[in-house]
Length: 365
Image (cartoon, rainbow, N blue to C red; front, side, top):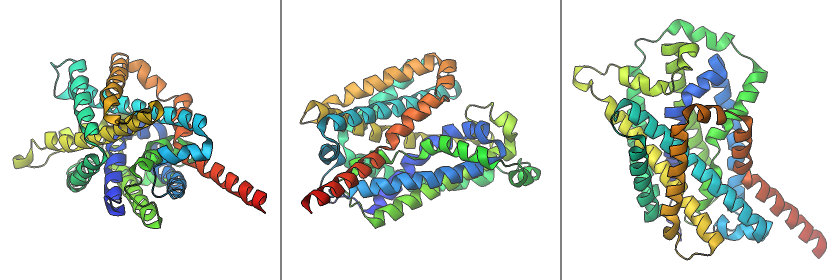
């Protein structure tokens, strides 16, 4: 039954986690934490590791089965179906954000004459076709682009530093507020804690200590890259201008000097990062289709892929047409609470399973 190794899932996890924060969330981090973004990221990493631990423990409940199947044995079928619906909603929400961010940027920078609905429709079509091919294809696509993403990110970073104001470095040590850093960490925590979706890789990978270490390593690598590019953006734009830019890292990519021969390299770099977004969205759509097919009792999850894709595309169009309202809403504590409450699902299931196990032991005694 095992199709993937822990190393393969780890490489895929890096591609999955790094795509959105690296390109679209650095500006929000600059606005959120100013000079103490590094404290926020470290705190978010530590909190995410806790969720990862509970996810691995939950995956060990029945190694030869998926959480979609055995979850009803822990919570009961009605409650389990409610959680499946919540996972669907979270998946569609994240896909719509990914597609809206991608379409808005491409439409404003490279496809100026193209209507936004065309970009979103074609993007949704691509991820729907990818999601229909199944988990194996998505994992292999993520693994294939892992080295490209890693190499392009490492190659680009030095090219963005010549105009940096290195005199600002001292501010990262002198400007800090531990209380604010902890509060900000809970906000950024949601960016790196989508471990619930990795339960859908079972039973094709073994949930054990080795997988825990590999996924923890991929998380640390992700945090390193986010911190590196946040630092570069801070040194180039400063906290005040940087937070006014919607996509500061993409602006840096466009203006960076790579030399005469490589002056037009920015479309390739943005293309690599866009591919990670498409792979991430394909995986989320796959998960949503699995959940819906389980609730509806369908034998073939592929029959609902285009339906779920259309729903996420509709949401993305609504966000794109009301950008100001979208920006205000996603920064509210209500949205943060909604996302975190679903991301904490592995904790709920693990604690309930332990409680029931102890209760059974007392009754048998």
